[in-house]
Amino acid sequence: MKIHERLNEDHTRFYIGQIILAFEYLHDCHVIYRDLKPENIILTDRGYIKLIDFGFAKRTTKPTSTMCGTPQYMSPEIILQEKYDKCVDYWALGILTYELLTGETPFDGENDEELFEAILHNSIYFQATIFTTISTNFVQSLLIRNPLRRLGCTINNSLDIRYHPWFQHYLYSFEQLEQQSISAFYIPSNLTDYTNHSLKFIEVTPLINPINDKILDNF
Image (tube, rainbow, N blue to C red; front, side, top):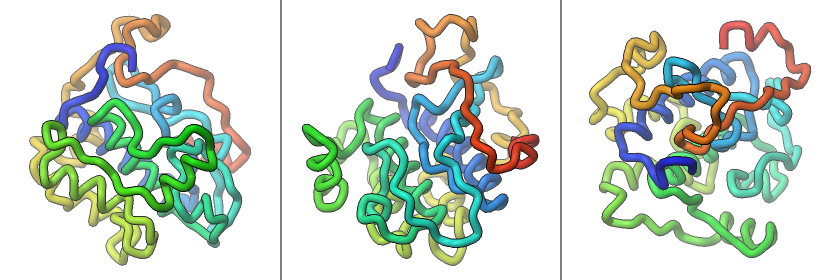
């Protein structure tokens, strides 16, 4: 990260809440994003975020099984080449939440094989000075290896994420996030100067695959 090694909970909730809104829109359009990571998030001149690089995004109404994405953020079902759906995005959301709070991803390995073994089998370390009981539960619920039990993937879909206690302790609502009526915690002073960008977010040209550009018109 450029400035912050990690973010506090309020700042993390501010960005994660926006990503949830983005995922809700994409999933309503039957699009699985499949490549959530800090490098694919940029800050606008108002300090809000935009997802970029839709090269791995796929529009589908049926489960798919393509192995793609960034290894540290791949869900167990992608690694095992099982059929999967939008739930892979919520796994990646759990990885990103952990990373924003700690400055590192929860699973590691010397190579992809070791990394995948860790994702499939290792427990996650939650440092007591960083994580509260509620934030630990939030991340753990997103990183449930069985997608049928993962937060955001049960009968209530993303509503279970919105109403998780971690967001109930937030000062602002999802409606305020959607309307961008909350003052952002960080405003880039110069969108072309990458040296002072926090969150490791960098401005790059988005790569849009032909899923249907009209889907992104209001995104």
